[in-house]
Length: 215
Image 1: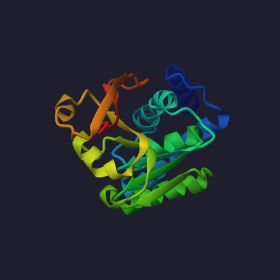
Image 2: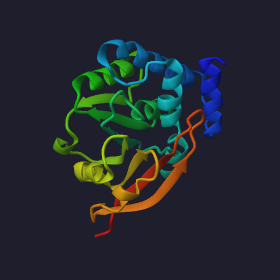
Image 3: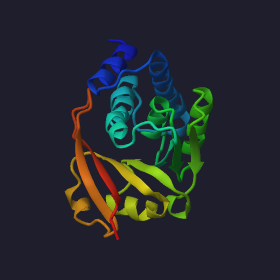
């Protein structure tokens, strides 16, 4: 089965109907990951099929939940993807949600340079890479996301100053992180833990949704 068909079928299983341009951009992004990986070691994965299932489809699994929590609006949405690495899930969100202004933050310069290259090559004006440490940043974002970045307490403590008044945290996790959920800072209100099923991936996945607790 071709990568294009695998991608379209996987997206459909996730409740997404990709346009031709979106599918083209996602596959081009996967190809760029593999190309840059030869020099910059962006990810441990080296095979196109693994990049498709473990990176692209895995990241696509958050799109329907994100649409529910943050539907498209005329005002626009600002999203910060913390510890984004090669841009996952931030780049995938930017490709499918042109109404969302996505900043992929990472402390490793070569990774944010890669995201900048992706934004240029795929003509994504709503995407940028930012080389910085999250703790040192200031601003206000509507959504702060992470994928395999750090423990939940570290994620919330490091980014709390960046969450806007009505903002939400979107943390992608593997199996339910019970230990981490038991150690949350008092300012965090986890309002939903959502189980995900990723096509072609035989592994547990979930999203931990949170906001600032009412003071």
